[in-house]
Image 1 (tube, rainbow, N blue to C red):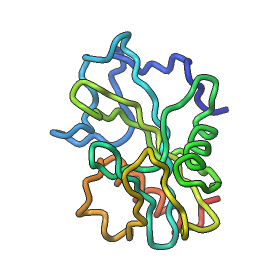
Image 2 (cartoon, rainbow, N blue to C red; image 1 turned 180 degrees about the horizontal axis):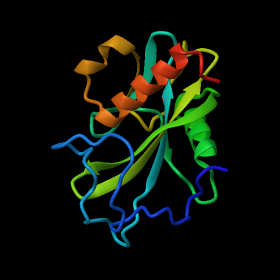
Image 3 (cartoon, rainbow, N blue to C red; image 1 turned 60 degrees about the vertical axis):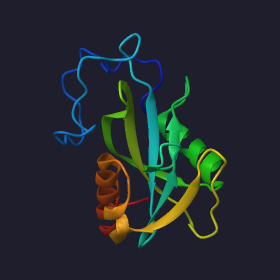
Length: 171
């Protein structure tokens, strides 16, 4: 059974350990004790969707490239959330693979979100389109990620999924 929205998983100011990458001096450091409202963070579930040489990225309102995905709705499993978000944002169906990573990301100063990334596969990435929610869609060559404005946690998830895909361990 996957994580469910509304359950207490210890994600709040009392949480001392954050799994996933910890990059000193960046938004990827474990969150300090300041937290929004009641000390809980919203959860955003993202998909790493790659083919043999490209990854799907969407440009958000902050001009950052991000993975497709979005907010976990009440009663929804993370797997169902990311499947729904892929349909809404890219108009394709995808098979959802394993959890790749989970971390707290400071989206804006003082605004933190728990990011959960999953690996995903689709029959094809050719001809996909993006919704009005994002400013652009790009099929970025995996070897061209270094020059893009993309959170480091997404880079780590992309690299992890690529290793699993290359090893034949993707659905």
